[in-house]
Amino acid sequence: MRYYHERLPDEHARVVRFNHQYAARSARPGRTLDIGAGLGEHLRYEDLDAQEYHAVELREDMAQAIRRDFPSVVTVVADCQQRLPYEDGTFDRAVAVHVLEHLPDLPAALGEIRRLLRPDGVLSVVIPCEGGLGYSLGRRLTTQRAFERRYNTSYKWHIESDHVNQARESSMSSTFISTSRTRPTSPPMCR
Image (tube, rainbow, N blue to C red; front, side, top):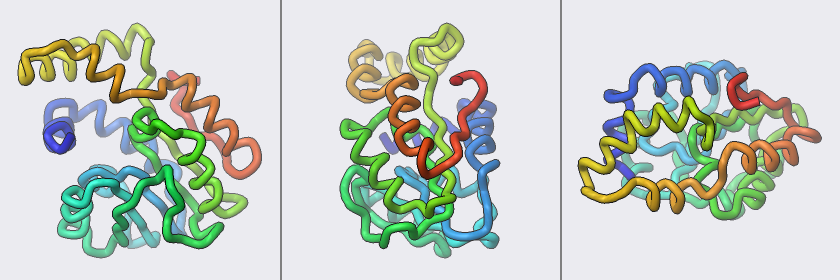
């Protein structure tokens, strides 16, 4: 996993930049919670001086990289599908960039995000548009090709086991949170 977090920003800079800039458009003063923060890739697109930023990451080694590179960010090692160590309504905004598609218990994660957001909080989500022609073609020419060269095996089994939620499931589950607590912010190509 770390391999792709380190390589994607360089190899697919335009797509990565679009994804992070899109999510950063929802920035506002106050407290932000970054779900599944990885190595802190999204933090490079945020104004950390204008908000109190918290990052949740499942893997300790990746959380350490965030602590090293972004010392002002409060970094917690935890599973976002479980109760996180914050009080109800702690955050003004939550960000999940390419995270929801990986979660086996998506309803639990969205329920936890809902609990943590203030009533007028914003959830900004970026997810791959699985199954779409453009996305499938783009993946075939980029990530799939690199994966199959590196590991000498089919990419299909990997993506089917890694992306357990597709855009449809993620957006339907997001409706659960957005109808009563947040404003939906989805890219036009996934609407």
